[in-house]
Length: 165
Image (spheres, rainbow, N blue to C red):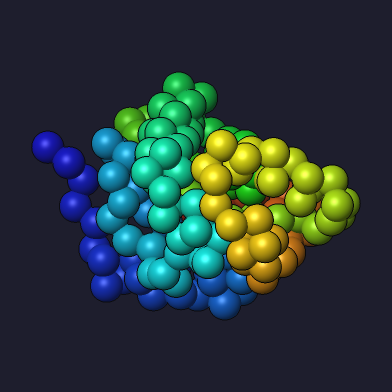
C-alpha cells in the first residue's frame, strides 16, 4: 500500500519553500509518480523539451533513475538531468523505509553561464527543438548559486517530515 500524502498541508509547505528559495519542488510517491508540485506548471524550457516524444520520455526516465538512486543511497542526491539542468532529490523516509521523494528541479547555477548553456545545449541536441526558443527558455530559468543550493540540500535533510523514526 502506498503512502497517503496530506496534499493541503504539503502544498503550503511547497509554497513556503518556493517563496524562500525560488526553486520548484515536486513530491513523488514511492513509485516515482508525481503527487504534487509547486509551482504546478513546468518552466518553458521543460515544456519545450517535453513537447517532443523522446524529450518527454527522457524526463520520465531521468526522474525514475533519480528515485532509484535516492532509494539505494537513502540520502540527498544532486545530479544533472537529461536536459542539462541540475536537480536534487531527497528520499522521504519513515522508519528507514523510503515512502516518497522531494525533488528540487530546473536548477541553473549561473557560475559559468556559457559552459552551463553549452552543456544543456549538448544534452538537448537529440530532441531537435528550436534552438532559439530553447536558448530563450534557458535564459528565463532562475539562477541558484552553489552555496544556496548546498545550504538548501542540507536543510532538506534536517526536516522532520523528510525522515521520521
